[in-house]
Each structure stands twice: as C-alpha cells, then as structure tokens.
Image (cartoon, rainbow over all chains, first blue to last red; front, side, top):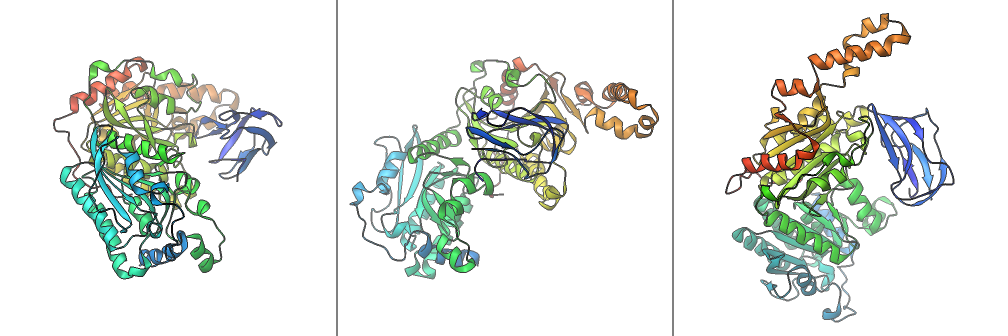
Length: 71
Length: 489
C-alpha cells in the first residue's frame, strides 16, 4: 500500500532515526535494522510526512511487517 | 493449452479488438501510427519499410540506431487494436529472418490485443510461428521489446521471449484482460494493477526497464541496440582511475547502496540497469568500460543486506547468460553475507534457482572478472563468479573477507564449549582473540591469495584500470560468445 514502509526481512530494530511528524525526502533514513550481522538503513521511497512509527528500538520485525507510514 | 485460451479471450477483453470501431483520428494524426513510431525509433531519415503498409496489423522496417543497423517491427494499433492475424505475424517472422540474416539487433514495438479472433486457429498458429522464430533467434541476435500499449495474450508472450523488455507508461502486459478475469474469477482488477509498471517492474520480473514516456522508452531501446549490437573496442588508455570505495561507509557492518559504485566503475553516464526494481538485492547493469560494452553484476547491501536469494540468483543467471550469448564481458562486484536463510526461501526454491546462477557462471565463456570489495561468505562466495566456477581473474580490496562465514560466527561454532566455560564478562574479548586466530588460519584475504582463489589484492583507487586490464587481456577477436540461447529463466 502507498505510504507503508515494510520490512524486507527478519531483523532487529537497531535504531529509529526519524521522529513522527518529520518531513522526509526520498532516500532519507527512517531507521536502521540489524540482520545478517549488518546494519541496514531503511530509506523512504517517496517524500512525505512520517505519520506513524509502528516499531521501537529492540523490536524484532518479520518480513512484511509495517515499520512506518509516510504520507 | 493456456496460450490458446488466453489469446482468444484477450482479444475481446484487452482492447476491444473483436469489435473494431472506426478510428476517430486520421491515421497520420493518431499517436499509435506505427510509421510514426518506427520513424521516432530509428535515426532520422534512415527508415526503410520492409513490409507493405496495409491492414495486416504489423509493419516492419530496417534502419539505423545511433548509426548502427537494426530491424524493427511495430504493431499497428490503428487497425483492430493491433490484433495479430496471419498476415501480420508473417511480417514479424520475415523481420526476424532479415535480422538473423544480417546479424543485427531486432526491436519489437508492441501495442496489440493478441491474436485476431475472427481468424480462429489460423491466427493462433501464426502467433506461434512468431514465438518459434524468436526462440530460434535467441542468443544469436539481440532482441528488444518495447511495450507501448496493452499487450495481451500472444502480444504478452512475444516480448517475454526476448532478451530485454521495456515498458512505456501506457504499456500493460497480461495474459487475460480485466473483463475476462472478472467474468471467470469475479476478481475486480484494472489493467494498471494487472499488468502495469508496478506489477511487472517490481513483482513479476517481466519488465527490465520502466520508461516514463514513449520517447524515453524508444530512447532506451536505442541505447540497448548500441550496447548489445555495437559493443565497441576496449581502450585501456582511456580508463581513468578513481577511488571506487568513495561511496562506501567506513563501518564494514553498515549497508550501503551499490549504485554509485557501479556508476563510478563504468564510463560516464553509460550504465543502463536492467530489472532495477525487481530482486533489488542484486544489480545487473549494461554499460561501457574503456569504451567497450560490459555487463556488471553487483550485490546491493542496501537491500536484504545484499544476500543472494532465489529471485536475485535467477535474475543474475539470466543476465549472465544474455551477456555470454552476445560476447559481453562481465564484471562481478561482490559484497555478499551469504544466502538469505529461512523457510520462505527454501520453499521458494532457492536451491533450484540458486543452481541457475552456478550453472550460468560455470558455462560462461566471455571474460569475467570478479572484485570482492568487503566480504564473500559461504555458498554465496562460490556463486558470485568465484575462481572455482572459472573466473578469468579474481581481485579483492585490502581487508576483504573471503570465508565460509564471518570470523566471530565461525568461532562461536568451532569453540562453542570453550566459550561456554569462560565468564560472561570476558566472553566478548575471548571471542575476538579467537576470531583473530581463526582469520589467520582459515579466513582473510591473504589466505585466499595463498590458496589461489584470489589472484591479487588491489587498491580501490586502482580498480578500474585493473578490471579493464584483466578483461582486455582475455578478449579475443572475434569476441568469444557462449554457444547457447537466452531462455527467459
């Protein structure tokens, strides 16, 4: 769905970088996940406002989980 | 026979080809005018029709693209929505005969509802003959498809049989149109969701290049004709060295987007990425290095950490086979943590699809040079054009890890009991000590050089010239080509 940022793989939420209400440009980092012993930035594909963060640092996310909503 | 049912239904459903209405515009003013489309594709004043300009639904022409000769055919969507009958299909088959005879690329501009219903099985037979001609030409001449409007049934499978598919903004590819889907399954879906840029660019992998206008689509087709049909000569002296590591983060653990590295590796603005949105954890790009066409395969750590998985292996395998068939040398940029683990991947056939990449590299006869930038672990190390699969030359940057797995992960398995016995507060430091020792014995790039799986450690600032030099030394005249077709894996 448009605006939803979805986890591509099982991962730990290492760090949430952006705050709710922030204005984001394409390619901005929303959070950093940890998986396969790597720190993987989650970037926005479209500009918009960060409406909602669905996860917190330390959470374990599954493939397909919604991480944040940008609209 | 899925195709038979599909094409019969598609004609009525996709573009209303079964009930043609008089064109609202004179053909000369109609944006679907095939003569205009072919004229826009070829270099100015180079077009020469090789078919009759009649109501067959297809036109074919020869001409030049960026100076190089090519053959092209185009659906005539002003006649019955571009539906294909016996005569129109023969135009395509003849165009293929001409392109194979002249050994030049062929480009198909598609805008067609599929087979002509009124002609019955005759039209199905004719469409099948196009498929046959395409398959016989596969791997012999580059085949590029540009889908500019709806392409249903046979008009969907035609492009799918070719090497590269470009989708214009109005392009829609599907076996059966929305009306048939609705009547058969009750599913309410429109053409965009069924076969537009999103589903085919990101999900199905049918489309290699998404264009934002018809002119852009034709331009990209022209670039592909040049890259595959006019590959140029590698001139080492023109390859300037720059720091290819400039776009990488300092931390080895931090993921990054590999696209800037690929762009820096290739000559300025020469790269054309295929399947950019599908299986994005690996990138496949045609471009030029020292003026010569090369194919670049690179893990992209930003997506899935750069892991290989079932789709990325299949995507890369098809790219390797296409490049090999047309004599395009390969550069393989490796930064891979392994195969993506999990039940989803196993059930998705990561073993079967991963085997395609092993097969594709192993059979490839073109020069193929590997550069390990940060790490190459486990089975994914083998799959990314390793020495064991026959790599022409393998380079690595200083500090790169070539191993079964990361050193810490390895010592946790190898020294599980010993680590369990040490106090928790010193376990991390003991792990680190063991990891250093493990790297000395089993891992590290020096060990890889010792046993001959890495030929040379090179600096990022010398990599462009090293890669170009290795390819140049392995090139032969005429170019070595794999003696196989390019089945759409």
